[in-house]
Length: 423
Image 1 (cartoon, rainbow, N blue to C red):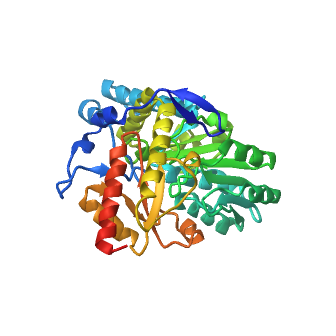
Image 2: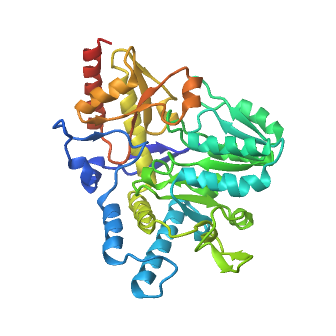
């Protein structure tokens, strides 16, 4: 029986996950590239591949009961509404939310963060108020707060990281003396894979009177997430990274916060009554879901949540932790390679690297000839790359369908990079 280390260091038994069996659920993984090579997909941190159950759920909606939700009282309209709300219930179970109405469907984590920044932020952050972030945030959890503090004359402060990507909680403790209104940070770094100690940071922030937003875009696909146990106030994630369609995502927030927040967008669906000079808004979560939603994407997100719950997120975590350790060991044998980020036991399935003397874009292009897909660039974390004094990195990232053979193909492809460039 494999052992998994949870976010607080406890050890629990979990049955092993078989990625080879799961790969049959993902049609794209049986394809070959234009170079005649089997597809080796190692860019799941950018977007995940989709299992057949998700593809079929989206297809079935459009083929069998395509209709607007919460409007038509005819059969397919009621069927669409039921499927849409069932997906919300699945997402709530998936992340441990106790109330389905605390789940707001969004297009992605970016929209969810902007919703909080506009609706909660502009009512609760004022002149001189501080918001605390970290040096390793995705631009989606940085730029909205930049815009907010510029508008209200507030201030941003940042928790620094060590050279291997670990947050300096001693500095965080000092920053909390500023009595920030909000602390916002990533659950898992999309560039370094660092797993942050969410529960500990939430407790520290709450003791200082701050609310906490957690960007779970890179955590929800890879770790067991229970928002009630974490204790945060807002939690966001994107569906397309969690085996679901693009254009799907969710914001979870405590009911009392959602009820106190004004609408983010205005129009149809988010209203109860409309008169020429005033309107009364709908209940949560529909108050924040203006207009016709992407019903198919939401249904696909629910199907993805059900699929992963069927596998078991403890098993997913065990699989990816073992694969990450294997990847770090194998990649360390490549001549001229530099690996970035924390040790395997403190990271998720993300491994950034550089080959000495070779630009990451060239690395990715050569790997593509072998059918190996990796990301190259700054990964929407330019300040983090500046902190590490790097222009760019290549990045391999994993999911439930990733295997040791994928890692071996990556290492073989990097050998070809070294041969071509003489690194």
